[in-house]
Length: 178
Image 1 (cartoon, rainbow, N blue to C red):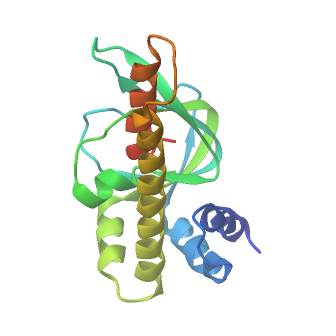
Image 2 (image 1 turned 90 degrees about the vertical axis):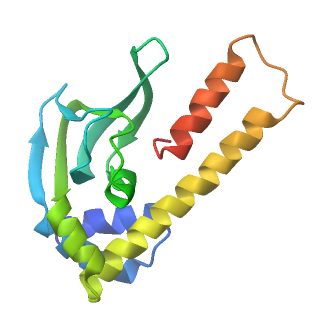
């Protein structure tokens, strides 16, 4: 099993997809632009146009969102292997957060052109990408719903700022960052 296939296996496992798809996702990762990010490198910025889908192969990425005062606040840390940036690729919305390499990170970056080509491809490459997108968004929705249930639970007694923290957590979950 080559490195791309091994990483693909872990990504598929995280999204509860069948392991027999490892080689397909591994081949897809090899079609992507390989990028080594330096510590502190901004990979995408909140509000910018969405151009790329990211597969974090090694390392960590800190996710930051602007609060009501305009300050960037860390909301999550993504650990390899994982995928991020998929929501904007689907709906062409601006980036919902800023993602910064936390230490050195290695990524496979899929540009818009390849993404659109694969999404329309009736073959195995398109099939694995569509399955991965559906699984990621389904998990994101389920986690977001769970976070909202906690936020809305009147039986939970909490400190004064806890409601704002729960809402921020629910929002980050729905955006796919948790």
